[in-house]
Length: 201
Ligand SMILES: CC(C)(COP(=O)(O)OP(=O)(O)OC[C@H]1O[C@@H](n2cnc3c(N)ncnc32)[C@H](O)[C@@H]1O)[C@@H](O)C(=O)NCCC(=O)NCCS
Ligand SMILES: Nc1ncnc2c1ncn2[C@@H]1O[C@H](COP(=O)(O)OP(=O)(O)OP(=O)(O)O)[C@@H](O)[C@H]1O
Image 1: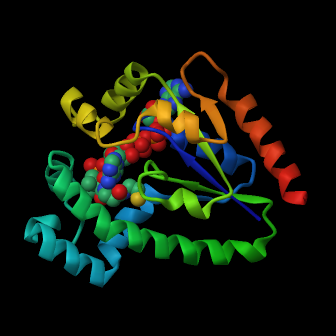
Image 2: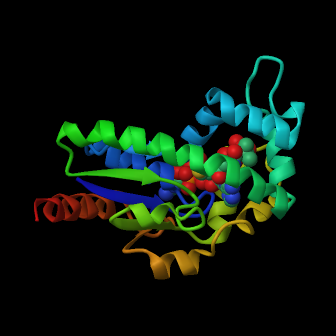
C-alpha cells in the first residue's frame, strides 16, 4: 500500500483535492483536523498545552481556544515552534495508528493531507508527495471568503510561516494546479490511476 502525502499552502485547495481522491475510494488522513482532535483528547498533550500557553488555551467546556492559540502562535515564531514541538509528535503517533488500521483493507494507496509535510519532517515516512499549487492572490481570496474572521495580515502571517510554494513544487513528485485555470478532476484521476498502477509493482 503506497503512502502518498498531499501538501500546499493555506488556501491552495488540499482539502478540495483530497475530497476528489476520497470520492475515488482513497482513505485520507487530515492532519489539521486530527491535530485539533489530539490537542483536545490526548490528556498528556492537553496538560502540556496548558502548561505552555496557559488556561486560555481551552474554553470552559474544554474546547480548544483556536483563536487564542492562533494569535499567540502565528505572531511569534518561538511560540509556534513550541506549539509544533508539542503537537507534531502526537499527530505522528495518531497517524501511525490510523495507518496500521488501513493496511488490512486492501487499498492501493492512502493519502496523508498536511500543510506542513516538509516543515514537520513527515514527508520522510511517505512514498510520494503531491503539492497543490495556487497563486497567492487566489489563495488569499479563497481564505478571506472561507474564513471571514481572518484579516489579510493574518493570512500573510500564516503564509510567512509555511515553506514557499516554489520550494514545495521543486521537492514534490507531483503538482496539482488548482489555480482556476486547470481542471481538477482530470489531474486527480490521472494521479489515482498512476498510484494504482505503481501499487501493483
Ligand atoms: C494554531 C491553531 C490552533 C489555529 O487553529 P485555526 O483553526 O485558527 O487555524 P487552522 O488550524 O485552520 O490553520 C489555519 C492555517 O494555518 C496553517 N497552519 C496550521 N498550523 C500551522 C503551523 N504550525 N505552521 C504553519 N501553518 C500552520 C494551516 O495550513 C491552515 O492553512 C492550529 O493551526 C494549530 O493547532 N496549529 C499547530 C498544529 C499544526 O501544526 N497543525 C497543522 C498540521 S499537523
Ligand atoms: N478550484 C476552486 N474553485 C473555487 N473554490 C475553491 C477551489 N479550490 C478551493 N476552493 C475553496 O477555497 C477554500 C480553500 O480550499 P481548501 O480548504 O481545500 O484549502 P486547503 O489547502 O485545505 O486550506 P487550509 O490549509 O486552510 O486547510 C475553500 O473554501 C474551498 O472551497
